[in-house]
Image (cartoon, rainbow, N blue to C red):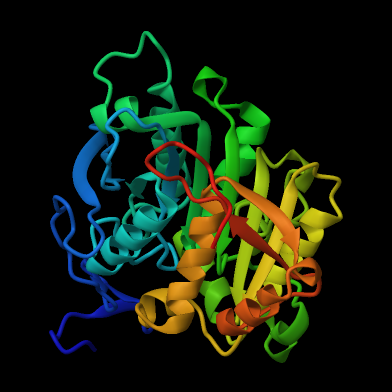
Length: 366
């Protein structure tokens, strides 16, 4: 029995509790904060918009401080995490994270507020996110009316990115796959996708998952509850990218893919497994894996401001900027930088960022 004396129907601690009378109590909550004009630390401005009235889909838009009003910026469609059941595009933790990423990556960002289970069972979150992405790229069409001015005036629809954390990374993967199969409005292509600590699962354990029977695990029970009509259960294509009905990874609809994992995260083996599967799939894009040592799931939110969190955001920002790949053996200083990031990788490559200055000249100096 919960402290408020309402009878509990089911609970998934420490995430949420569902009561028999139908109400839902989310137990991990980051405060909701309003958008801001020129954040004092980053200069990033944000505002809230409505993408769709029916169904209700909204978003928070972010724009870095502009010194040249006519400059076109890459567009990031960002999808928040929270095991599908918690989290918000309007929360303080996502606000500070995206202020930092937008400032360093110099992108216009659209943070999607999808509807959450269990009030809205999956696949609603996937459909909301797909509608949001299609709305964003529709702004590239000349005949689209009521264009959102930040994106219409400052967005470069030839440089569209999709990214997310945890469950949001799962959704970002599914959106990228769907874009590769169905296409996006206006023929817009996704240039790159980043998946941070992706929430994938399956009935057959891999790596350290062998310590527990997957079908009886917390994650499996949660997924079965929030996605009761899923074909193949936990092995449905949205949760298991290598499940029996999953589309070929070779159909990923982006040119570049970045997967980041954390050493102490229980999902790390799935992330590495996914990365290796993409490499072996015949997909023609560039895929990279970054592992952060001594950290757990979503550490860049839990310990925002820590050295590892700052460095992970720098890594993501580099991915969003126009980049070139360079091998570290040609640039000795990169070994020291790798140590400062606490990154491990079997074939370590680091992005050398070409920072964009006001003169519109691309330079390649750290």
